[in-house]
Image (cartoon, rainbow, N blue to C red; front, top):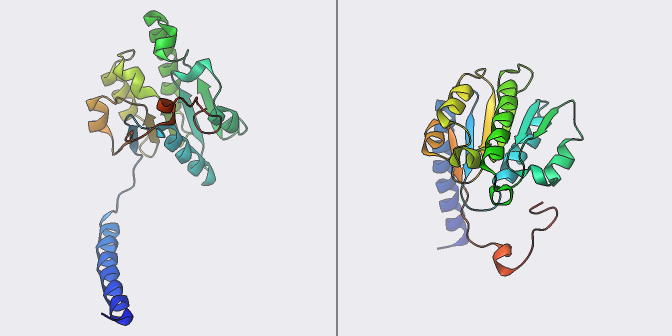
Length: 202
């Protein structure tokens, strides 16, 4: 087969692929606020959520962020997005990882306090996108009632987007979500004795 033949075959294959994609785009004619769930044991769930926060800001949208669990230490995301107080309503409500707090009553109280803020952001007409970071862990640990949380999310304004991150997403969250991404843990530096690095994990 000559280089010309390879080029022609590639062109025809890409044209068929383009036709399929164009038809799918044509059929996608709805607009709605999405519920997105990013879960799994791999690294990058919060990073993905905050990437969407940055994307929303790039489009001139206003964003609400509630970080569960991670309140015992300051993250790079918090330091960065707090630079935009007019565009980002940022709230940290956790007391640290559950194995650090070792206090069920305290963890549940913090979760309830955090969800009260989430409820405000969900009904705020000025907020276009909300990120509930590590909410899946809170729901997995049963610090909040998953049915109540999903009911509150379902009652939001029709064009408001909601992003939920955290490992162990309950089945009800997966079913309710419009888009679900599961990040796989293939390899992690921590298991090789490398501590969490600024700008990467922190």
